[in-house]
Length: 434
Image (cartoon, rainbow, N blue to C red; front, side, top):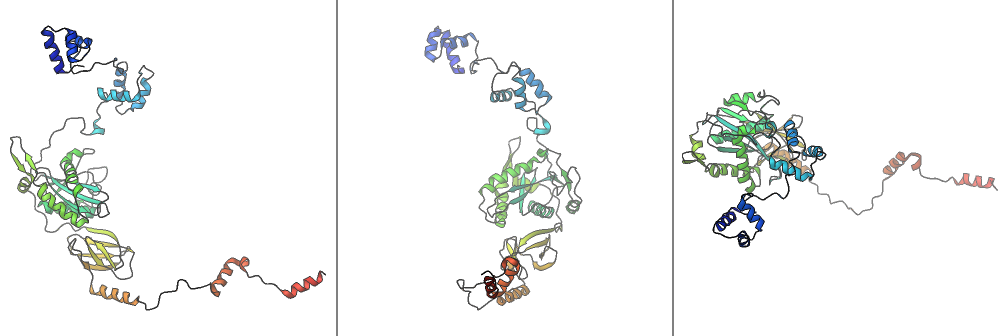
């Protein structure tokens, strides 16, 4: 095969009177190759096929079958064309289908892939897009859930870490994100979250409708299988995952939240946006100018419920602090209830009985919140458990007691009775046999 440059040189040398043999020696090619390019029978840059197209004999059949069924398995189609005269291997057949693009595009299955797209216009303050992203094996040994809220007009992103994906945690995270954004947009755009949208419909969950009314927003779900409708927050998920999550050095959720807030307020807001006229501005400048609706003074009063195991010091962990429980519950599972916008938490048994009520400490403060009553009760229980007795002798001889032997014999029944010999009866029997 001659390149474009070699073809140009061959034509120039031929026009200057060089023979084909001389040109072939000069360029290091066969004379027949040079003659084919000079005659125009071969095109520079295209390698000649050593054999005819092996798919040509069945290409029309393959096209008809794939137009009838775009999802027809290539293995099935291969089994059909081998009796029709196709002689090459299955991998060659698949490669030829892809090279010729014979399989038609299917919109319902491939979404936007393979069809035209266009930028969606987002007026300032019109919409905020929501989405969760999940990362397993967080440095603190648990699964991390992050709710991202994105203003598609400016591209500003804010995010909040959460422990669960249930509705109360979603409501709390949304309120925290909107307060970081400085307000709420008129429309909340979500995918079909079961905590927001009734599965299989476009209707809002009855339990979530009061939340939207509390903030004065409209909930708009994405059309089915059209995630590009909230492409702005999808892009934010990729950006935050790649730029922040992969490099974070946080070792607990509280530190990770501080790092995420700092990253989005600095690096995230410093991203540049270029306009068609060549001017540029930052995401932060656009976000500051975006008109958002004011938020209520307090968030929606949903109630969070999380399970916790009581530690040996009669306390449970909750958001970077520990809260006391009555003594004697070590190792048991209890529930921590926190009503959003309140300044207290309740520790309850799994049956719903209130075990303790505490003020809510600042997240991540590392405090141990214990009332004087709990302190006295725990101190009393600990002191009562003290003993001055010496440790037991683990090497002493302690055979089964008489009571234990009697119980073992009872359990064994006739098998376990002690064997006794009646010597008088034995002598009598022995005398009778003489």
